[in-house]
Amino acid sequence: MQQATTATEQPAEQGNAPRYDLRQIDVDPNFWYPVAWSAKVRKGKAFAARFAGHPIALIRPEYGPVYALEDRCAHRQVPLSKGVVDDKGCVKCCYHGWAFDQQGKCVTVPYLNKEGVGRPVKAYPCREKSGLIFIFPGDPDLADKVPVPDIAQVGNPEYKTRQFSPRLKCHYTFMHENLMDMNHQFLHRRQMGSITARFLGQDKGENFMEARYSFARKGGNQPLAEALIFGKHHDDGREQPVEEVVSIRTTYPYQTLQIHDKDGDLIMDLWACYLPLGETQQVTQAFGLLSVKKPKWTFLLDIAWPVLGLFTHRIFEEDREIVEMEQNAWRELGGDHNVEVFPVVKSLRELLARSGVPNRYAKPLKQD
Image 1 (cartoon, helix red, strand yellow):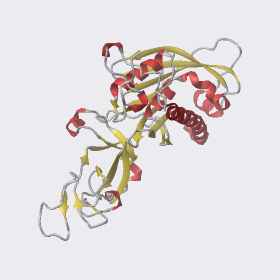
Image 2 (cartoon, one colour):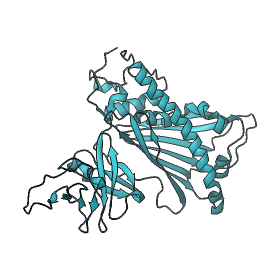
Image 3 (spheres, helix red, strand yellow):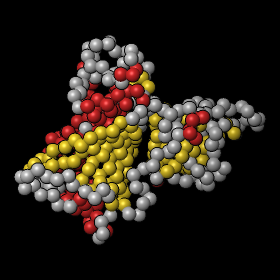
Image 4 (cartoon, rainbow, N blue to C red):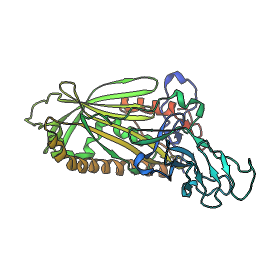
């Protein structure tokens, strides 16, 4: 494998700090990460989930909140998610019936009549919000100091919200870059027609990066889903006014896309978290919620909803193909050879690099 020639950008204030390939930087575990939809974890059942290379068992007792344990019995390491939830809310391993409580303590080894025999398993701080189950995979002492994120307009009756959770064969950083960089609309020409992104400005800070765009249609028909939700846009050959502003923001480790109309009203709100899977985090499970403002005549949105779903699915499938090709190129070339020229993406890469944690395979890159 040949050595990568392009180093991950690092902010100037880091001076001579080592630089690493961005695709070998793991997420910081000291945040709340969604690992399952609430509806998937039924009462009295256990559910298998993952964070990076760690198997997670989610257990929902008949009464009380859902909790999360390492998905390995301390006895023979078989998955606790294959077990049985008893009437006390403990999960019993399917093999020998060892029982573990919400703190991961082994409370029963049924064939030995003595206490303190079985070893515990790791427990993760766990919260449920907006139809998602979150765990805190980092330092548990920090969990109460880090807020669970607010998610789109879930629970707001003025909006209609849909869920999506595709799995992609790429590092999570490719997803942040893809959404932040709206200059790739040529990719979506079959779905969107000929449109051009107009960069309006950016803001950035220690833990966030935001870019704002508007779009001008240069040709082709406006998609039906777009017209039903945002109104008809005409291309009369003149410079088109800014009718909507698209704001894309990575507030580490989450990403949002909001669309405001010409009056400043929020008409679309997207929230996404890219959950890494596998030891090298080169597979991503996306968890996202998309909220659309209901028009005066709500039935119009209900009619457009299936069309919007199909439209967004097609757009995403094009994005999926491209980010997976980027990941394949990274493997074939032996590292990150991206030559980035857009200042917004360069700043985003700096944010992701300084916020994440180099993994066990990462080696400092040679300085230019």
